[in-house]
Image (cartoon, rainbow, N blue to C red; front, side):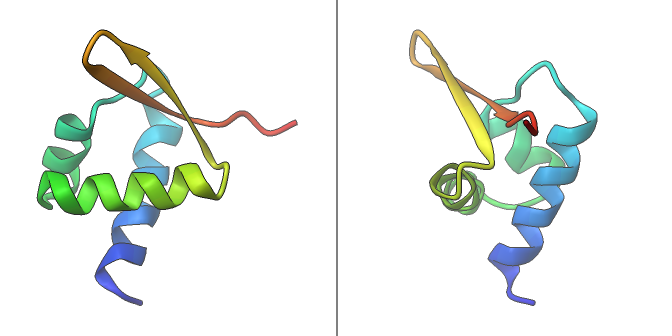
Length: 68
């Protein structure tokens, strides 16, 4: 498992537990990786349609997409 795959799994678990929406900064702090690495993992999750992103001003909140 590569580092980015590990971070993706950690982020999915964090977002599953915390449904209020988290920023890249908050996720990078909780996973102990740089903001760049967290942003790359979030881009992959967004590309796979596994998360939703809500833009508020210059802040992006990330949510795990609800299963249908």
